[in-house]
Length: 546
Image (tube, rainbow, N blue to C red):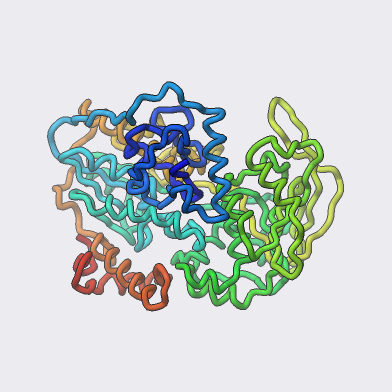
């Protein structure tokens, strides 16, 4: 097998289009594209040309001879995919749809949200001549969860920001960062100034556990914890009790694994990443030696992806344990359960920090008076009803002592002022991304908190197709304001301002042999945005909105 897709795959299909023999699947238009955890290289047809490596925005593709020991399981993962998905009906080349021709005239679109969904939507729009896009975000920095959500020890995944830099460099692209829609500008303002408004605001809050004691200090959202160690300006000054030997994370998705890895990691290893300096100082002083990750159901129902599980299994300085392995779940049921079975069978590593994956355990109540001292948990058993596997309490309870309990049971979107909102799904009702002619949604606010970075690309394509259909049909009202638009609110950060922030952070990182040293205070970010970049390759000028 000449080339292998590894853990950092973002599934945006750049490699699919680059491959001359169509050996990377699922491809756009095939079942599973946009929903699979990653893409896969067929070992039978790969011709070792390396075109996919050049196209990949996150360096996920590697020759099989260059795989590190921790990446060797991806050899089997790629092979096994084609055992059940042979794709024998493939065409000899990846199909590229013909370029759509939209009706002539200038189309101005406001995109709210500068994360992956918003930037992929801007990219799809800017493929068409005559389209201009202004991307708004309430933060002074773009890239959403790619900057503030991806764990600092996953720097390979963060390389997708190189793709975003290419998108924002296109003619017709404009930023209005540090602009809060609903305060600095309103939905009605955007509608007056543009032909269409596309919301890609994501899911900014977390789901609650709904148990007693959840509001005690020391019980917090994993979403906030992730934002804290990633230097999000809203959470940079947060504090978390790291003075106990154990922390408990409720939930067993990718975010739970990220949080557990960061809490158990050697701080000096994190010091070589772009982690917030404030978080790094706190983790250096941390007394946490064990993190217990709880799952209500069994190993076969775990929500984390196989690539993330393989990354946890490969930790060589952490004692990774599996508890609650039910006898009635065969170890070879799925690739994930095979990995979990292998972890469960490993010899222990006495003296190492511990990451415990504990299944068949549900949170019952948070314990403590004025702060958290522990979490009472209930053992569960599995029951299948109407084809769904449920976790049923057995009545067996115990209390895990811990001053820190983090809930990681999913994200949830907030209502968008001026748009309808479905409280049950936490999304804006839509048809193919169209809320009404002139108003559109993409990303998590459209489909809920599901999918991966690349999923946002196909999601954005669908929404932009609906928007362009309305444009061609004459359903979009002309803006009331001229193309120059209304003056930007004070302290708005444009593309040049973001480039100045980026250059400042990268320069500070270069001095410390790190990717960047993040500015985590809004005031310092705005000050950096006003500072012209040094002259030289990539310099973009000074900092206010342009």
